[in-house]
Length: 274
Image (cartoon, rainbow, N blue to C red; front, top):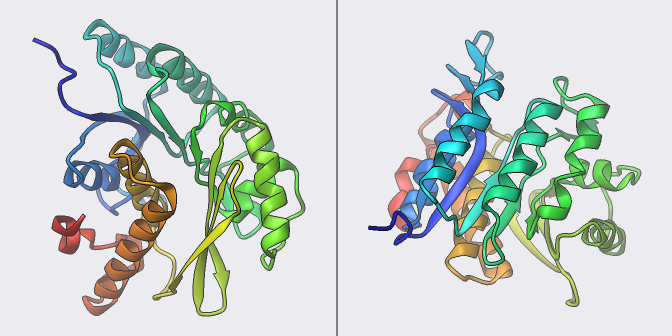
C-alpha cells in the first residue's frame, strides 16, 4: 500500500505550543482544506517570542535524520511550505529537503520570514538574510512582505511604494526563480493591499479593510491558504482573495472576543468555511 494516495504538504517551520503561529497555525488550516499537513519542526517553543517569557529548544541537529526517515517511506509531497528559519545551517538543510522531495509537480511556497517595517527582525543577521536568498530559486510562489521583498532584491525600502515600483521589485525577484509572487500586507490608509505578480501578466492588487493591530500567525495563515489552494489548483488571484477575506473575517471575530494580541487569530471559529 502507498503512503501517497492523499494530497500532502510538508511544512518546514517552528512549532509553537501557544500563540497560534507557525506550524500550530498551518496544521489545522491545511487540514481543513482537505490536504494532509506533514510538519518538519525547525525549533520548538512553549509560546512564541512575543511573550515576556518562553521556553524553546532548537531542532537543527535532528532535522536531517527526521527527513531521512520520510525518504525511507518514499513520501511524495504535492506541496512544500517554508516559514521562519533560524540559522544558515537550517537554510542548508531546507535546500537538501528540496533536493530530496521537490518533484516537477511539487508546488513550493516560500515565505521568507526576515523582517518588517523596513528592518530585519532582531534575531536575524545580514548573513542569514543573504543565505535566505539562496532558497528563492526553489520557489514556485514567493510570499514576502514589502520589507522582505526589498531585502531580497537590495531595493531601498519605502512604505509608500506604488504599483510601478512594486512591479520592478517583483521582476527582480522573478529573475531569481519564482514566477508567482505576492507582496502581502502593504498598508494603504485603512486598507491592506496584496500585490500579485505573475510572470507574463499584468500585476493585480487585492485589498481588504484593516481590522485591528497586526497579530502573530497572520502571515502563517496567509501562506498556508496560498499553498493549499495551489495544491488544489486554484488560480493565484482567487487564492489571495480567499486568504485575505478569511483573515479579515477572523480578525474581526478575534477583536469581538477581546483576544490578547499575543494570542494570535481565533481562526478556529471559521475553519469549517475554508
